[in-house]
Image 1 (cartoon, rainbow, N blue to C red):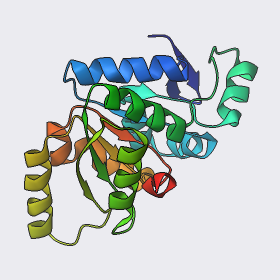
Image 2: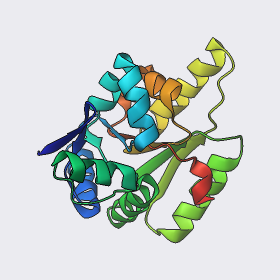
Image 3: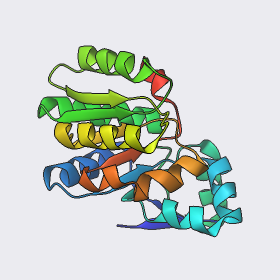
Length: 195
């Protein structure tokens, strides 16, 4: 897959529809991975933090979320077809998942928001199965063990992780629960945008 390097971040040169098709093919093949949608601020963080850049660059899909990324690509002579906003990608992915009755697990945001977002997504995309939800706050090891068991029981095809920024990106790709997930989409916007 062709990539475009913007200050060391390797963006995949795909359209929104191509990104959804690639994500769906990974889901169908039960391949593990995660998607990130960096904007210029995230690229700047990557430039200053090599570990963070490694996490971003190891994503199954690195999608340009921000017109600044597209302008930078043009200035640098890198080929990017256009913006792929995380929230639009997420909605189209949910629509595609609904057509195949796939399961979704929502992780992140304040208590109650993921549940509300899940209900709204299921209403908007009939056929989408909400496997479960969990807010973005984890208190202790016992609580994490309960959450891990709950997530494994649900075995969603595609968890959606909201409220993801530098410290969360570090946690999600290495987190034990993600080992059992097929595709973890990490988007910077909160799950609240769907509620």
